[in-house]
Image (cartoon, rainbow, N blue to C red):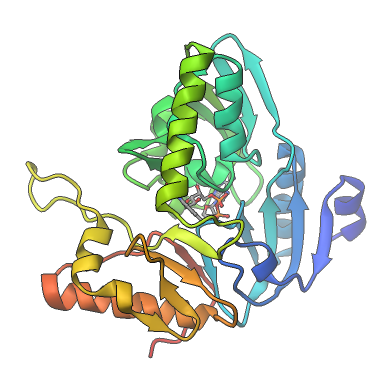
Length: 310
Ligand SMILES: Cc1cc2nc3c(=O)[nH]c(=O)nc-3n(C[C@H](O)[C@H](O)[C@H](O)COP(=O)(O)OP(=O)(O)OC[C@H]3O[C@@H](n4cnc5c(N)ncnc54)[C@H](O)[C@@H]3O)c2cc1C
């Protein structure tokens, strides 16, 4: 890659950057280099430059849904995240750079008296990561208020597509298969009263504080497994945590990886924990649910790098 071109554009390059510094699990070895991009233009430049030189690349946002192998990655990581929210308002529409923190977007909606994003309050990561995985909570998801996204494929071709083209479903979008990148997004919101929106945001933040570990203090990636799809059209999706709790997951531990005491579907990493510990614990959890209920749990957390099956 042409470092001078990237640096001139304001992209920060860190050689052999440890992924543990870039993920909320705080696990994972080094990558070849990490290119930190804050704006859509920088992200587009980094991806096209790596494509031009044929270097393997991995795209990440806030690193809050990732488990990176202890050996790290033989790839350049393009990290698209920004401490400063980049949001423009036009009536009920918000155009947002996908590097913006999702929670900052939720807070902005409240401040601007625009309703529809409050339920996303407190979810870590970026707007881009949330759209790629259709993040959500309380039975709702980010796709509900999404109008349009600016996408880029790995060769650098960009296009604006309506949200419906992303084929979003429960914690899914077609971007997970296509590998296209969200550069920016437009959300359509309804007018709301600030006091009501602020109260709802506070209620949700309080609920999350009560039920989830604080990722700024405790290394974790949130819920490890996807909830279980209904077995019949009449059935409702069932919480993976329900099966895990009954399968005895709360007392499981491997090395420094253990289950969060208030939630059987959340793994937390103690000092000295490795990514292999987390992977092994997740296999134990899934095996127990398979043995007792005959249900195969699917990880929600994305694995990056090589993990050896024991
Ligand atoms: C304490 C805690 C609580 C959580 N609670 C929730 C919750 O309630 N609901 C929920 O849904 N999730 C939750 N999560 C998981 C996580 O926060 C979300 O999945 C989040 O949306 C991931 O965004 P990210 O930017 O961190 O993505 P990353 O973890 O960096 O990446 C995840 C995937 O998204 C892709 N990606 C990232 N940015 C882009 C982009 N711009 N364009 C295309 N693809 C991209 C990456 O390639 C990768 O495959 C929680 C995590 C933690 C730690």
